[in-house]
Amino acid sequence: MHQLKGKYFYTARKDRAASTLGFNTNLTPINGSTFWIEDVSGQGEYIFNGNGTGTAQGKHIVMWPLPFDCSATDEFSNPFTYSVASDGTVTIVLENFKATFLTGPWTGMAYTVNSFSLSGMVSTDLQTLTFATQTPSVIETLTMSNGVVHYQICGVALVMIRMEQ
Image (cartoon, rainbow, N blue to C red; front, top):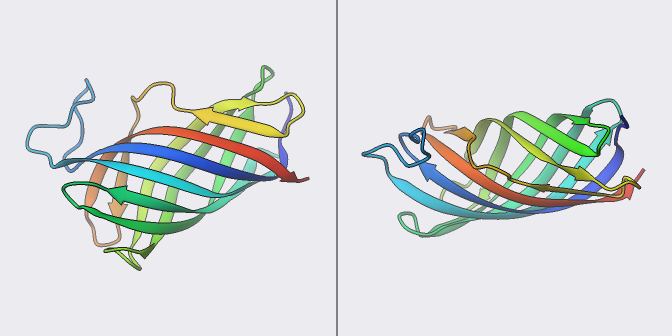
């Protein structure tokens, strides 16, 4: 098993299904929920320390069609843990992911996502990593700094390219 070390720039695309009350076991919104879809794209960097830890930072643009009909940008910087299996499978876990809105209707407001993980592959030369959601079964909890909570199911496609050792 090998460890990753260095700075990787990333670009990502994420689609989220969100609900105010959560989701049933068959991934449909709980009756009575307000339900919406979010489109997210972003870029930034992941710094791998070579010991299973690192730091991720970046910016996203988030677009909400109905019922919100608005867009915003956010910024984040968070620690993460990771593992690399002998077959090149990489798993990254971000616990208590925190971000702050820079623009849009929630400018200055922070939010936290309880936990999310990425699973993907690293190239044999350790220069490129790719991640994609395989099954939409993980329900994340997002809590705004004003106390509003909603639940989301995410589909992610993310590519990282090594920029520095």
